[in-house]
Length: 320
Image 1 (cartoon, helix red, strand yellow):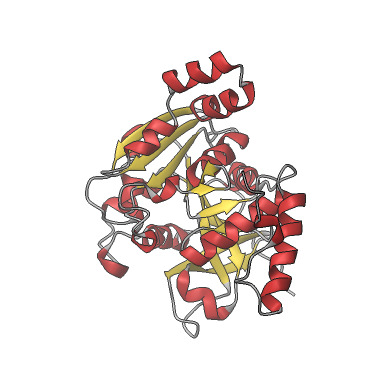
Image 2 (cartoon, rainbow, N blue to C red):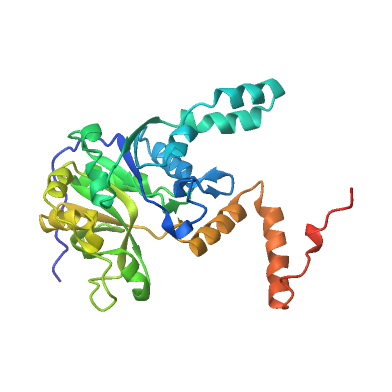
């Protein structure tokens, strides 16, 4: 039996310090809620989805975050800024719990903002970060994918980058019937558990054309070489500049690895997934989970009994 080819490089790569969060999409699947509110600002329990993403980056040690936004995204900038009047009002009331919650977003990291301008795809959004990132490796975190705070996926990817250099993508095994929703990776083993070498990438292939069941999920650690490739990458699927196409070029050169993730991931990409995410994360909260889970069990039982539209005793309030 031939041993898996080792792909580790002897070089000592530069440490990753910066994260890029693309947030310029129009959020059309959530209209009319996103007519005036950025999709990234929709609440997941009591925090906007994008705050979970920034918290994940900072938990992994990335304290310089660039958000690539678009028009009508001013609410994102405001959320990660100080709200002096609100803070003063809460301080005057002695409401330290809510005061800390309001101040936390502005204290998470050194946060920057740039506008994408034309909506030309994820690859173009990443290319917009070139001046800020410079000639350094950087992470890219997509807001539609929320990784459970108890997981260490991004830290693991940074460790793999330290050993192998090049770029690293997060992979998750999915049902073949779902692979057309993702970029899909062709892989070969490295000899290290949970780490593969990516030999090719295809954007949203059909089930019969997919090279594997490994889907690329929204976490990347990218070598700055990706910028040069993106500059010469023509529009691909959907008329957009696809990051997957640029990574395909890098994979052909043997410089892309994948970390296989089997932990807790929440998808907020469409309405049904968003609702499932809110329920799952609420159930996981120690302050909300016990009471909410009990109510949820009763509600599901009523649905199964065909009475789900009836009044719930917990929803009844005494008359004033």
